[in-house]
Image 1 (tube, helix red, strand yellow):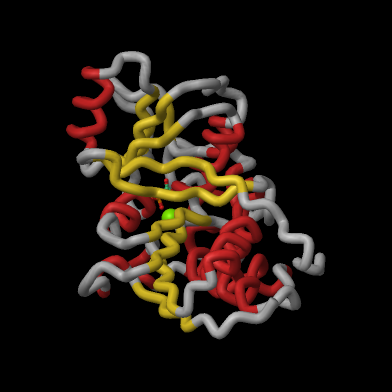
Image 2: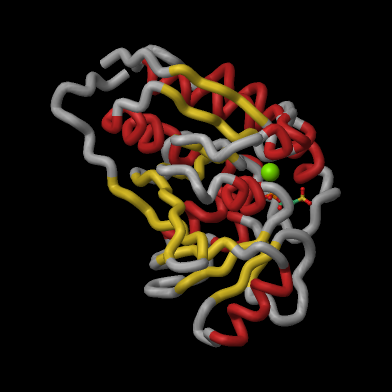
Length: 237
Ligand SMILES: O=C(O)[C@H](CS(=O)(=O)O)OP(=O)(O)O
Ligand SMILES: [Mg+2]
């Protein structure tokens, strides 16, 4: 199905007012990690505004699992690495996540009527949800490097292409992401709290069948997986 969707690609700082529909993209690594957390059984992810808030939430809910980017730190259970997270059993757990870019981007659009958190691992489910909803305007928040992160921009453009029609192929977009600064820094060990498999895991297209919807629940921004069944008319590509 073709849609006449109007796509805007903006950095976090360019967000003047809450968009109606926002897709917040963080390929490396926040939303790849979020998808893996759901893959490992997490029930929900609470996005923390700050490290202090993450620790306060953990103190109030000792059974929640607190996750931050960068190196391991006291009070936190996990770091922002899909390669490290994939061996953790999170069945039924609530995860609290605080990262430099991804979680900040989602919190910046918390007033939007629909917020999807995305990376390549949930690209098709995200596109399908947007198609199903028939949104005519979508703001893609490119969270890394002031809106210039090549891995996030490539993924955002790929998802936008998939929304408009099934013909968009992933290969070129993945090549751009693989050549990004983030990929190089992860491969070179510049970014801490990493596993050697992080880059390939972040570049796995459609590893998971769900989209990730973030919404305010009381005062907290909460991400939950959302199954998006393939409509009978959706032609495979
Ligand atoms: O963990 C990450 O990859 C980054 C943090 S940094 O760029 O390595 O400092 O956070 P994210 O919000 O997932 O981009
Ligand atoms: Mg990032």
